[in-house]
Length: 326
Length: 264
Figure 1 (cartoon, rainbow over the protein chains, first blue to last red):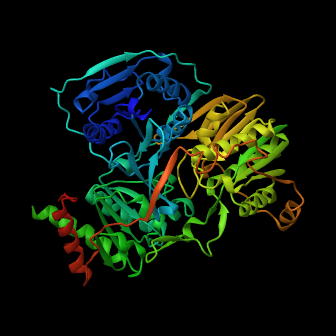
Figure 2 (figure 1 turned 180 degrees about the horizontal axis):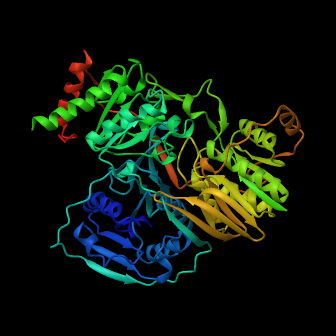
Figure 3 (figure 1 turned 30 degrees about the horizontal axis):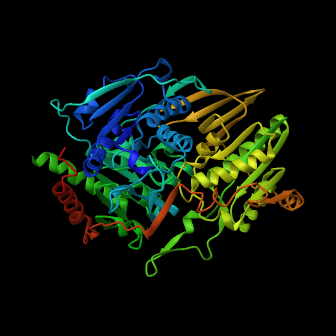
């Protein structure tokens, strides 16, 4: 059965995430000696952007019922393509849509699914993909393997790099018109969230604070620093959920935002394992805390033990001085 | 009259879990078992629906015999009856096998209008069981709910997505997964806790559910856990010592050298 399944496929309704999946997918496809395929459903592309970023083939599904993501009709569309072409691997972007879609699709195809995979590697015989995922509050990393094909996995934003767009790359665009049942659920209203500044998952610098900040007014020193370094402001879970100083979308951790910035600064955050898991993808982690035993220091690159009320203004000042010196 | 099934998972209190670095394993001894956080919100929402429209709430849990405690808590919060799905054969179930077991129980219950569950479980964060169960039962799924309004055969749900809030309308029966923001779960009163012990608690095994050993547990799973290891964060752990007047510029310099900070 497994010999029949060929090709590494990627799908995300978010094009930038699809490009990242193509980046990882290209390596997997090359190692498997197979083709890399992108599936586009919402009709927003002619497919060439996917080819430029590594796809050998693009399936374009064009159906007026599919311009907005709906889990059931999207599952209809991809099920039809999968049954016809029998891919080996299917990577799905772990957006909230992707996370509800992947298991629904997997159940329909009666195949395994590993959500929020953090590492994907081929096994020794190059037959299956070994997938790591984090469990038990971030304490364990489990390696999963699918017993069936296609092997489905969801992958979060920011874990893999897209390839440079290469306008000279050649590939094939295939139009597909599968039969889609209208969705059982009707969208009555869509209200965009008020985007205050940069989204945490898009930010390259995140300035995050926790209970070390004693009063809501004191957030001003955090804001001043964030403004100086051009960072987005995040927080620990108690700041959003218990104190309501920040919106719940801004707290970082396993059950909140999982972020992958270049620089993550944790000010006055003790660093419970759930928080640490949310920031694991960061390139550099800095911790400032007055407790030398705070767990955050264990998983930081740079640490200063000290009073954040003194350290942060000093840091702001140091960054500002730097600007002047140049 | 609305009949609500609510799915409950018992988990270890995640904030108290630690790993033993010498044995490289999870320490669960002495860690309390609790209802997974968003499942608690699902129970609360089910009870709210019942209080408003009348009806019945049935709490279901698949797990070891200890999961009875989670169901007892659901009963104390206000559920009317509960079913514990427990069998050594269920051990090692992945999301697919778990959904199979839950689907068998739901098929046995037959009469329901809506299934509520948490969006994720606190221990595995897989987001899978709800959608898989909805697929097996051929039900529409509405996920990430922050508000639910039932009106006859219709349900209106507010949903929380990354970049937008959505209001959607579906028909019953359906499966709805809820977020932590939907409500504040109640604490049962002592009276309610005592009354809960008199409410029905059924225990169903694989045989009771007509499930074969190939459909559940390790054998019935589609994904295998090959190994599990203690998560390690490989970090530099450089501590800058001294007065703030020295450490602050040192840190800024180090971040510039790492290429993660630019002079503004």
